Length: 274
Image 1 (cartoon, rainbow, N blue to C red):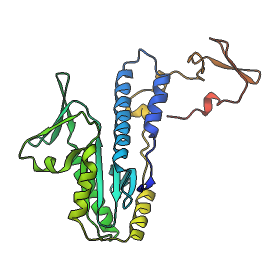
Image 2: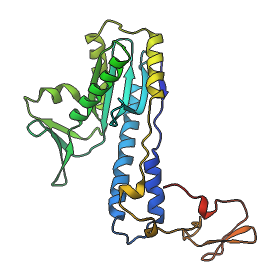
Image 3: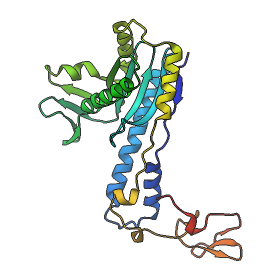
Image 4: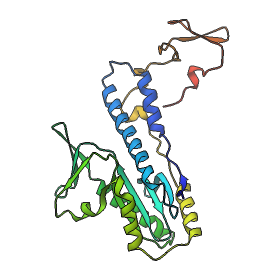
């Protein structure tokens, strides 16, 4: 049987806005490479999360909430890639789609990627997941909901080589490839045999968490420090991609490729995707 999925993930407005911005940004714009890099990274993150879905398809006792963003009312937000709920415990999954060789450095609390003879540092996902656990624990405590929260860092790319120091017990315990996820969940079920919440309470909790989800609302122009006058305005032609559509006697006509569109499309003043 399949698990009950209360909330599916969606393509974020930020990704949609970056796509729209790139369509309107001149090819020679100095920020174009930065935006393309950020868009590639975020799309890779989504693919990584989708890859993990496969290994969670036979968990009927769980309810799954994907891509949730919450706040404890202090102005700060925390985002959880995937939250699994069952009567015995809750499980946070922090999912990373990073290729090459990754090393969890316990001395400086960072993740180091080695690929094609280059190194790149990332914020340690163990710290991210631990903060999510702490914040969600507070969220539950404020509502007097008694349960245990565990977390795991899941590496979605099966060819990624995971390394750490022999004394980094937290990484050895919490980090795994997606293919080992079911085995680790079974161990957690053995660790927590007692049901702390009823099935009804778990369903109610999953709905409450989903209802408290606060979607991120980033202004893509402000994020990349781009003035609106730097982008191409007007209506883009679907045939030649130039911004040369003109309103002519109730129709739209492209002055570059002579494409004629009689159906209704948005006026330039109605385009508000930023």
